[in-house]
Amino acid sequence: MSTLTDRYVFAALRSIPEGQRGDIERELRGSITDDVEARVEGGQAPADAETAVLTELGDPARLAAQYSGRPLYLIGPDLFLDWWRLLKTLAIIITPFSFVGSVVVRMALEPGDPAGAFGAAISTAINVLVHLGFWVTLVFAIIQFNGTRRKDLGLQPWSPAMLPQVPRKSQVSLGDTITTVVFIAFFIGLLLWQRIGSMLYLNGEPVLVLQESLWSFWLPYVIILLVIEAGFTVVLYLAGRWTYAFAVVNTVLALAFMVPVLWLLATEQVFDWAFLANVDWAPDASAWIAGITAALVLFISLWDIGDGFLKAWKSSRPAPVPAGVR
Image (tube, rainbow, N blue to C red; front, side, top):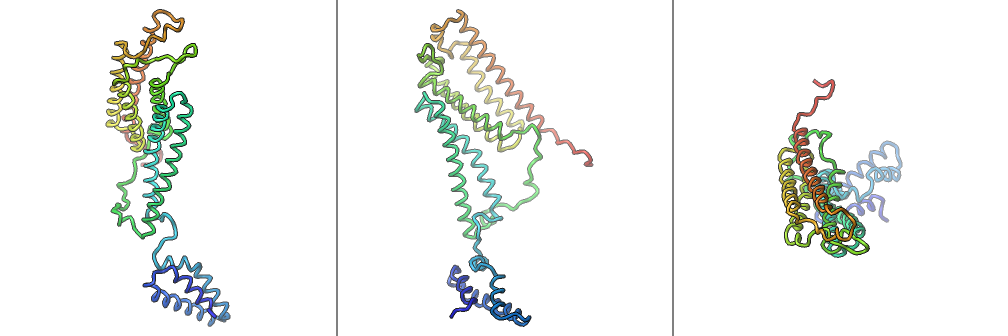
């Protein structure tokens, strides 16, 4: 009949590669025998001593993992932070773009259902997060199971040079980033809705608000510019703070939107004024609608430019020394 020691050694060795079993078996049996004999010399019964020694050794599968150098976790401490940082970065970059892309595609296919488009976009973003979490974790789990270390992957060890700057209150928040991306997706959806459906209904009939000729160049240009703006917003969040370089890029994007739109408004190439024939408005309604629109575009663009440089200036100032620190 097999002893407890025989059964324990068998359970430990069956998950160890064949070539390593001989040495490990001798080492394990020797260790168990020595500990049992020490307990017996101390006055403990042999059967009780054997049980106590095996209990202290613990689960034989765990012991086998220690002998063979295989981890018993998905992501170990050596690679955990790399896994977490990569997962967060991919989620912040890919999820907003999947949301925007879903809204754009759904509004193009079903322009009469904006609520459905945003619902589908939320579902798509959630699915993207789930898939990112699964596949990134799976890749790291395989790497970890194979015994690969950070140094084997060419990853640099941590050093004080990697410490982040102390954030200031004026820095970009995740909430601001999400709000901006969602607003851009909504605006793109409105433009596409105008293209296939209508942004305005009068007397139950859809009417065009923007001139159809804008789709030959200017509205696709604006949509591409908005997508770039969404990407810039994500990059800004990842950077963690405004800089003068970011402020300059923000200025270029703002001017690239403001200048053409103001020119189009000035040359009456934006609105399709035919819809005014269906409403009882003043004869000069087209003039004040265009004027208010131009004023809003000018104000928002200039405010955005100034706000970018103000945040960059605040970010460049040295952080205040806490009270009591010399």
